[in-house]
Amino acid sequence: MTTTTIDPATDDGLAPAASTPRPFGVVRHSLALAWRSILKIRRTPEQLFDVTLQPIVFLLLFVYLFGGAITGSQHDYLEYVLPGLMVQNALFSTVAIGVNLNVDVTKGVFDRFRSLPISRSAPLVGAVLGEVVRYSVSVVVLLVTAFVMGFRTGTDPLSVLAGCLLVVAFSLCICWAPVLIGLRAREPGAVQGFAFLVMFPLTFGSSTFVRPETMPSWLQTWVHVNPVTHLVEAVRGLLLGGPVAGPLAWTVFWAAVLLAVLGPLAVRAYRLRS
Image 1 (tube, one colour):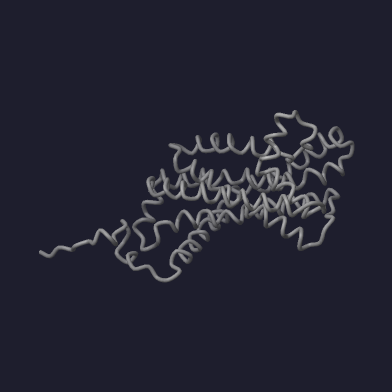
Image 2 (cartoon, rainbow, N blue to C red; image 1 turned 90 degrees about the vertical axis):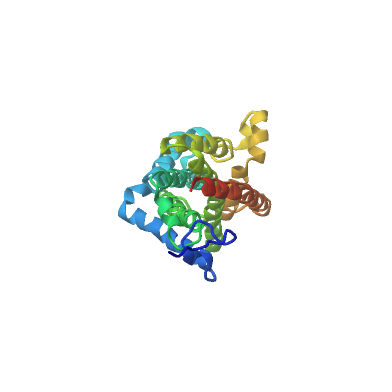
């Protein structure tokens, strides 16, 4: 009888073929698994309800119910609130990845991935990259609906595209928070509760719906340091005109901080859970 000796320095719990990964293997595997996430959306399109129907309902409710009371003009409020709703709906849609990851882990899907000759981090990275579709759909749906309602941009198409890409990029950075929650929570139902507990102060405690100067002084202090406020103001400047450099610099700074802090924590939780 023969025995096989496994070198502890190279064994990471994967199949033997994974001990000698090909160049760019992690990228290739991650993109393949990102496509898996997109295929799941194609098979169950109702997963897109939160980035298609929900943004439309939010925009109609806030503009036609509160627009006249807040600014005196529903059209003026449409211009003010649209950039904020683009940000809010994209951030709300990040909660889905935490729920989906929790389901995959509890059902043993990631145990099957570990038996494949792929990078161990590829399933997690692929799941995050697949979310680009959801965030992009949310932004496009809001813009199209707003144009039908009479919204018109005050800048050039490249600036509008930059604003949309900024929302998607920031969402990819902050989505590591729901990822971390999804990997630490015991059941999918708990993920939504914890994730929205984080998202509500960030989105509503900002300049998304009303101007900060109308708020109490203690709340203004939080609004001015809130990363979402800087993101909303940067998107407003890119869509309507106005200051962009300052808010954009703060947005990039906060995105880098969120990615640097939440990313490693989520990866560590993933390795412990999977």
